[in-house]
Image (cartoon, rainbow, N blue to C red; front, side):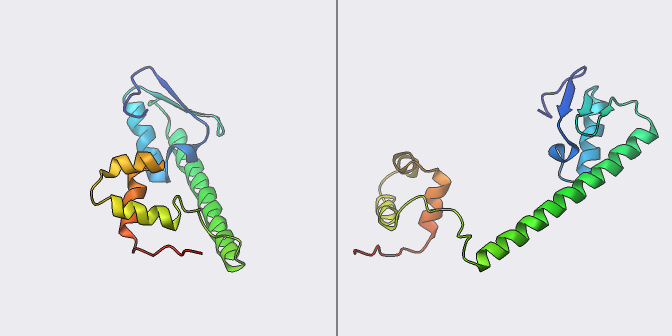
Amino acid sequence: MLAFAREGDTVVVHSMDRLARNVDDLRRLVRSLTERGVRVEFMKEHLNFTGGDSPMADMMLSVLGAVAQFERDLIRERQREGIALAKKRGAYKGRRRALTAEQAAELRRRSVTEPRAALAREYGISRETVYQYLKQPAVEPTGA
């Protein structure tokens, strides 16, 4: 979207924290867009930037951007704390494996002679997941 936006366009963003990762990035993106004649509108904050903005508008962008970054950082911190507590009580086990141990062993055997992309399609996983399984040490499946 950033590369496609043209002069006279309006970029509508729900909230400042949805456009940029931090205040510096936000200011850089808004400046870059407005210099190209693109209007930037933030719905939640009720702010519009057109390029000929006043120093007050620039200050509002910085202040509200800093508040949005602070909120986002607090959310991440709470999320990390919650995950740590869930892991401690054994409730958080992470994502389920895409393949069983038997399938992973078969994947390793077949990857020697067959293209990895074909294996990925057959198992319904991404090529990256195939490579992740190939990196892992081989664990013999248990035959119960």
